[in-house]
Length: 256
Image (cartoon, rainbow, N blue to C red; front, side, top):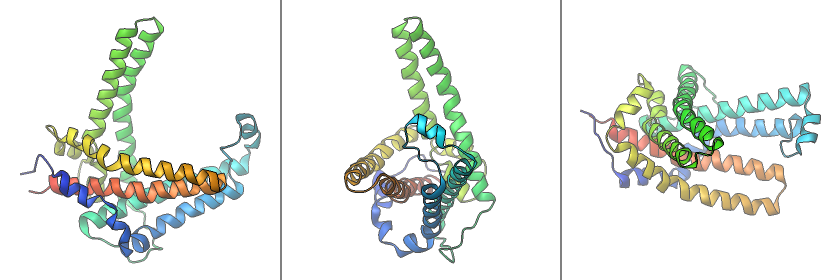
C-alpha cells in the first residue's frame, strides 16, 4: 500500500547541496547538458538576438540568421534541461550513472517528459485562466470585490493543481505509467500542502541567494557573461535541489 505522507527531514537532507561534492554529478551527469548549454550560449553570443536591446533596435536586428540561431540555441537549452532532469532523477531514484559524460542520449523518456510538461502547464493554465479572465472582466466593470475574489480563487487553484502534479517528472524518469494520474494519486489528502511548504522551505532561500549573487555579478562582469552565469547557476544549482526533493518525496510516497 502506498504511503500518504513523507518526512520533511529526510527530504530536506536529500535535497541539500551535498550532491555538488559528488564527482558523478559534475562529470557523468551534468557534463553533457552543461556542454549543450554552453554551446547554446556561444551560438547566441555570436549570431543570435540580443534580447537586451531596446524594442526598436531588437526588431531591426531580426533576420534569418539571428532568428534561426536563436531558435536553435533555444532548442539546445531545452534539450540540455530535459536530459539533465532525467539523468538526475534516475541517478537519485535508481542509482543510474551514464557511461560517459559526453553521451547525450535521447529516447522516448525525454519526449514523454516534454509532452507531460506541456499537459501540466495546460492543466494549470486552463482553470487558472478562467478565474483570472473572469476577475479581469469584473475589474473592468468596477466590481472590485468580486474581482479580487476570483483572482484569489484562481491563485489557489493554480497552487493546488501544481502541487498535485509535482511528482510527474519522477514517474516519467522511472518509466511509470500515467505520470499525471500517478502524481495526483500520490499527493492525495494534505500531502500536496506539505509539498508546497517543502518547496518554499527548500527552494526559496537558494533562489534568494542566487539572485543576490546574480545582482552582485551584474556590477563586475559584462551583461552576456552575467546572463550566462545566472543561467548555469539556476539550471545546475537551484534545479538540483528541486529535483532532489522531487526524487526523495516520490521514493517515500511510492514505497509499498
